[in-house]
Image (spheres, rainbow, N blue to C red):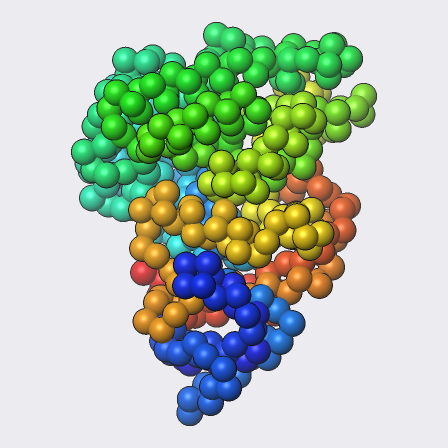
Length: 437
């Protein structure tokens, strides 16, 4: 199938594009990029005037709960949410049941994603067997089956010696370790940031130091082993300062941030005890959120991720202390970035593309996707004027635990192309089963 996307505002800092032009897709590839292009015979012409065309968005930190917790999310429903949010690629964390710690588990996820026919699912393998932090997982086997990175996300590797072993082994395969930084002996019982909110609401606090000490430790292990290190869901100003210093030294360190850590803080948690504001790591101080916003603008933070964490109603509609951590985020990430940063003029479209498409691909060692002839046609078309109201019906995820239920946001993806196939058309999901590679 061929498409002519006419009159889109194309933004791709990799090739210096930031202006209106036409783009022709033919099969899996981009055939032409230019002005006044003629439609090939049989091509479908799409009027993209007023919209932005960018390289396909990539979320390198999601939880699809499959296998083991399909009542929260499956590969198929997660892929629907990803596509609805404008993503062509997602990297799934390994805290499933069984844990994704073998090549067979990696292959299962890839096969399920191909059957769904919506987006590329890139499994992240566990560092240790069962994510228990005791025995090195089958890293080589998982690499052979398609694992793109390694993490014990949800726990973090508590032993520095074990983490060193993991990093030494992963570095042999030129893969990245995504580190969930949490010293559990400091965060035990913590359910909210330790500070004003924990005091005000009378709940056990989760100190920022529990994250920052492990960021420091893992940066030093990166220095020792030479393994590429990616700090997951950074949430504190001090943690960001540590990453900045490591980068200044030339260490192979990158980091990511979520929309909820950019745009929410502990001050948003009231005596209503809305459990959709319970996160891991927790929402920090307003000053931390401000520092993180500055970090994503100045390049200190490499990637915007969602940490998409679906949970069933009974796991969130309960007392704060026993409610599960996390929220869904795939479908609100782009609208939140547009509403809060891009459309007000604080962030450029080029920077948005860097943090949501270019840098995550680079961190995961995925092939580049560029808006140029010959590149694979993984593309996202965005309407910056679209008004979306976040409701349970609007969300395509199986779970509805969003911190932004009821909010109206401006800007959203309307169309998604994966290997030249249109998997979302004017906001409607259009899967192409069994054809994605």
